[in-house]
Every structure is written in C-alpha cells, then in structure tokens.
Length: 124
Image (cartoon, rainbow, N blue to C red; front, side):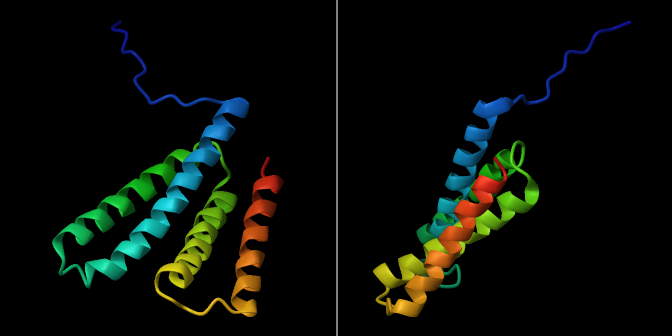
C-alpha cells in the first residue's frame, strides 16, 4: 500500500490558536475598513491604483476571516468582523470626510464596540 502524506494546512490549537484567530479577525476587520475606504477613492473602479488596492484589501480581508474561522465560532467571528467594519468605517468617515461626530453617532459606535468586546468575551 502506498502512503500518502497528510498535506492539509495545520493551525495552532488551544490558547495559541485562539489568540492567532482573534489576531487574524482583527486584521480582517481592519482590511474591511480599508476596502470600504478604497471604494470611495476607486470612484466606481474607474481609477486604477485605488481599484487595485481595494480588490487586494477585499481578498486579504476574506483570507484573514477564513483563518479566523478555524478557531473562532462562526457567529461570533462574523459579527465581530462586521462590527469592526461598520464602526471603523463610520469613525473613518467622521475623521477623513468631515462627517459630523455628534453625541448620538458616538454613542452608537460605543454600543457596537461594546458588542464586539462582549462577543469576544462570550466566545473565550
């Protein structure tokens, strides 16, 4: 009988795997903010370099999300990924594009951040 080695990609398990998963998830969320920002500058994909950067950020965001899903439950990972993207994009909009940073918007961003932390704590 011929022995075929197992070539599946391995990933750390236990606490190191969980830390690596959360780090990958944070990177995926940051890249989600980057591609949303890139969409604004790509101008409907009519500008070459911003379009290339946006597509690269989308691909990397999905890749890091896939890595995170190896050690983090899907529901928590997806909610945190979306939360980072939503809150980060809204904060960036206020900082970079001059959107108003009124009390209600800041309160809502704080609620999203609280939910992200809560999901992290609940899945540990």
